[in-house]
Length: 195
Image 1: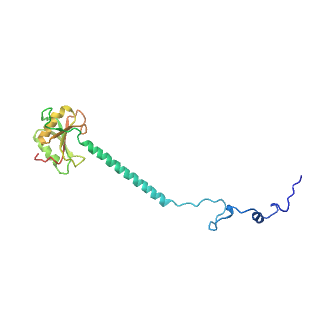
Image 2 (image 1 turned 30 degrees about the vertical axis):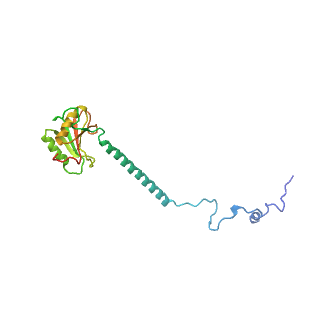
Image 3 (image 1 turned 60 degrees about the vertical axis):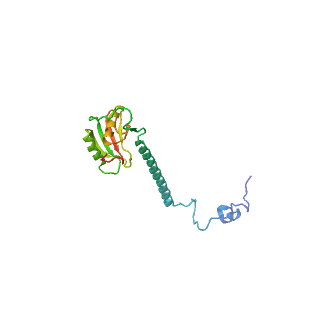
């Protein structure tokens, strides 16, 4: 059966007449300020300044967290420098002795210049073997302490404390390797060359 195209069909109409015959939809209403043809994409957004701002904010936040974290760590390290069980130099135990074979390091933990050198002269006058003098990594100590690493060094630590007029000794591994027979004096603001 042959198909006939009637006068009312779209095949014989012009494109303008065909578009006039179909109902209008949302795609027919194109804003006049968008002079675009063909496939349409959203306009490209310029995010350079906003991206830079967010990156700068994130960098600042990371730096702040790092500074606070380091401050916390340094606070814990500073707290670890204080002996947990300081012992009075006059406490019971071995008698105070002078051990010329012990190596002594003197650290100045104050802002007073030359304090370690003054203590070194006092110790050398009492026959102590002072191998080094230096500034400590902190300058805010108020109480002087003699540190020793091995239990059998307590008598020598007491003798070293007595030579300087220091009242505290403490056992720690912080200042030397075990077995090194090294004694470390950390001078605080309570010590003066007169003793």
